[in-house]
Image 1 (cartoon, rainbow, N blue to C red):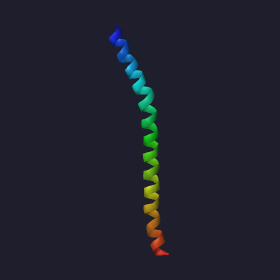
Image 2: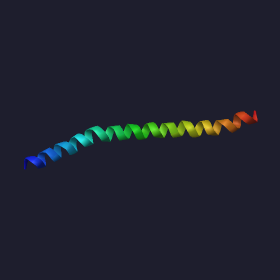
Image 3: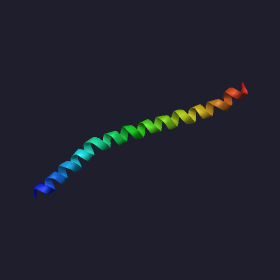
Image 4: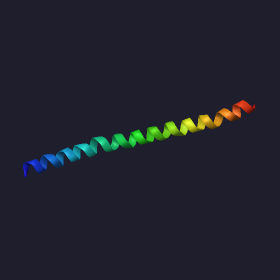
Length: 49
């Protein structure tokens, strides 16, 4: 019974630490991709003018 409680505590710790980290990492990666593609789109317009 005690081992089961330890496993549950580890799972709770895992969720409380990793889930917010993953979400912030995903949004940061999304921002990087968004900025990267925006910069790629800006380059051809700068060359034409």
